[in-house]
Image 1 (cartoon, rainbow, N blue to C red):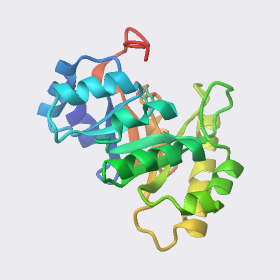
Image 2 (image 1 turned 90 degrees about the horizontal axis):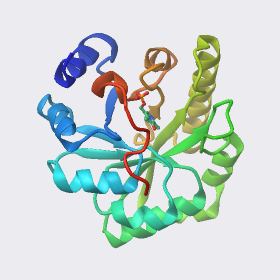
Image 3 (image 1 turned 120 degrees about the vertical axis):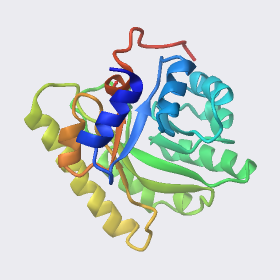
Amino acid sequence: MSIADNIKSLKKETVPIKVTLIAVSKTKPAEEVQEAYDAGQRLFGENMVQELVEKYEQLPKDIQWHLIGHLQSNKVKYIAPFISMIQSVDSLKLLQEINKHALKSNRVIDCLLQIYIADEETKFGLGFDEAIELLRSHEFAALKNIRIRGLMAIATNTDNEKQLKDEYYELKIFFDGIKQSFFRKDDNFNTLSMGMSADYKLAIEQGSNMVRLGSTIFGQRVIKHWKNN
Ligand SMILES: *Cc1c(COP(=O)(O)O)cnc(C)c1O
């Protein structure tokens, strides 16, 4: 099936209207992003800053770009002028850096806190306690050019459905608690980004309202990293 067909069938069959679909275009050439764009897709996710910036420059300006990969503080400046959402915020220090560059660009940048839920040592993210500590801090309260829109997580890379379900369930409970404790009056805190190609149906069942799909839309990725940056 073509990229356009894949997007259409996802929207028709498995991704409900209330769930936002992020097309993860990492490693894929700009022509393929354009194909998805021509099929009506406007939200795209990338995990490398340099690749993201190059695609931003080449492609239509009404694309909303989401950064979904680990972000180093010294690279924030390259994306701050245009990024639509940074889903991978995993420290207060990074959030402060994003705030600083957002201010310079005269913007408020939407962010998700990335929460560590996987049973693996390689995944980035804040632990539940660390996220709470961050949200309670005076330093966080002082940041006026970022807006926390919700939480993001990557589950364990496993076929074990019970484990995936448990991880996503736990994150949904945590999300509801954070909403209640810190964002009760803030309608902007409304995004729970969980689910990738292998497990998005399960994630949606557990309360996800944003899924990040790469291979389901664009086919398998041949190379893992398009370029090192
Ligand atoms: C690559 C990636 C995805 C998409 O993965 P697929 O399995 O191709 O759907 C989603 N989220 C993050 C954070 C990624 O790095």
